[in-house]
Length: 105
Image 1 (cartoon, rainbow, N blue to C red):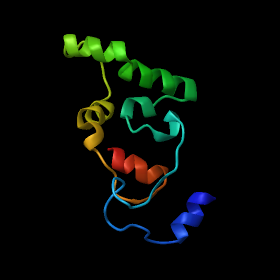
Image 2: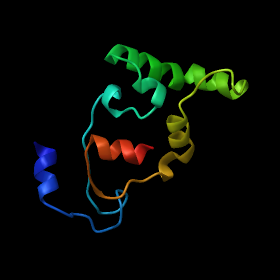
Image 3: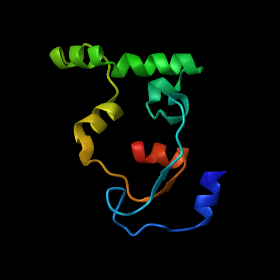
Image 4: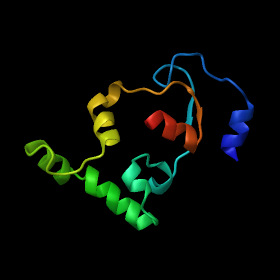
């Protein structure tokens, strides 16, 4: 309901992005709804999605993959986000789940 009400307000950005004085509103949800990884999306239930995600993003998996490239499957979306670090900013605005997924890819 809040998302719908804010969306009706129209543009509320000053163009400075989330790091400036602009407004950033996100609709948060579970991995099952937010994930953009093709293999994880094939899982049928929440527990399987969580397990698939953890199997590609857990600290020990990332460490093993770094030591032996190609030995473990990691999530390229997560890897890219981590590599960009805090330099990654979203433009000011109001995002629903589908918009966040598009931005994440």
